[in-house]
Length: 350
Image (tube, rainbow, N blue to C red; front, side, top):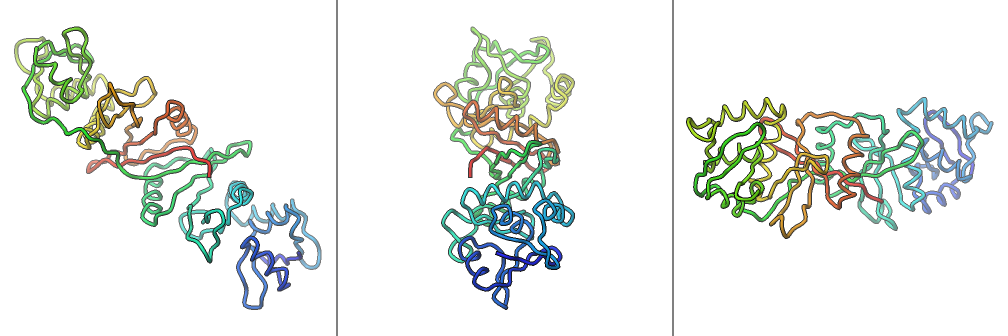
């Protein structure tokens, strides 16, 4: 099928050829004269598949030259082309998007005239910066329009990994235990020990801490949360003057510089009815349960970050891979001065 290269598009003028290529794969955009206009992504793909001969001033444009032409006119053309090509080879109808996303992808068997867009797709290089706030905004946008946000991440060898990004806070079934007896504990470096006989109730009614013999051991975060609820009194040496919450937090921040960030996320998760335990063994801040940890598996690993956190894709890939390997879902708790928002990221195969 011959097409003429004009600027940044390829025009197929033959009506029968244009009609055939459009009806079979919905390539290009129909023109008033009966032909179709292809963008350079489509043209490169059809040329590679030997379904299109590209001409300019009557001379055939070689495949390599067309790629170079496209790369000069479109940012990160090679990254976008790898993602476009993969979706096409999987049998999807793919159209370029002029908005925040790179592509609109229709369900298998669906067409622009018979189905709604299934995926919003962004093509990303593994060397790109992962902007947490921007990703949450894109996730919110796709969720509001009932589309799935798919991120096609291309590594340096041209291999693709797909991720599904979505927003939304987790919920559990446990009611925050704001009432109960006030128990006493004492601080030893980076943890609190409760020898008060009533301390066992903290573990039984909220699954706080870990029972070691007759002593309940609490983390600094659990302790601060319980102090705020009025459920725990801490005395620095086990007797004497009680420690204020402000003084306790100052000590905790000396031990753990991001203590306040983690505490904000912990507090929010607890208020949502979830049981929260350390996620150290899984390389994250928390592991989260929606019920009794003794009878339930943790559904999520949660990592607390600043709301404007930016990082590199290999870090995100590592976190998702680890969570997937232990059959959990990774959530990033984005903490701002006003609220905590959640971004979910998981590997998918479209």
